[in-house]
Every structure is written in C-alpha cells, then in structure tokens.
Image (cartoon, rainbow, N blue to C red; front, side, top):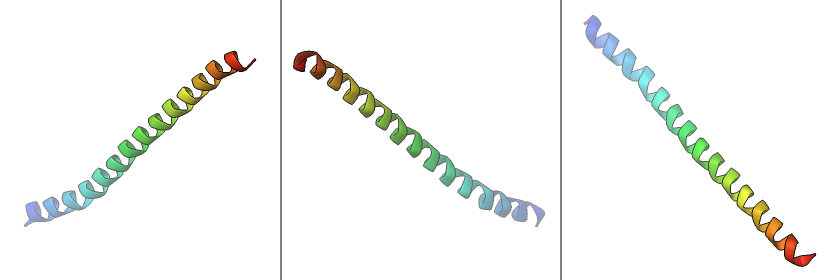
Length: 53
C-alpha cells in the first residue's frame, strides 16, 4: 500500500519536472539560434559597410 502511494507521488512529481526541463531545453535552443542570427546579421552589416563607404 505504501509502495503504491509512493509510486503515485513520484509520478505526480516527475511529470511536471520533465515538462519544465523540456521547456528549458527548447528555450535554450531558441536563445542560441537568436544569438547566432544576430551575430550573422552584424557580420553581414560589417561586410556591407566596407563596400558602401
């Protein structure tokens, strides 16, 4: 009886933690993508400014 109760309690705690971890991983990947895109844009602007001036 106590084992069943413990198993239910652990399942109730693990599911939200797994969802939160998945959200954090996705947010990290999106953040890295945004940083890379900004970096690429600034490099492109730097190359363009050399030829415009």
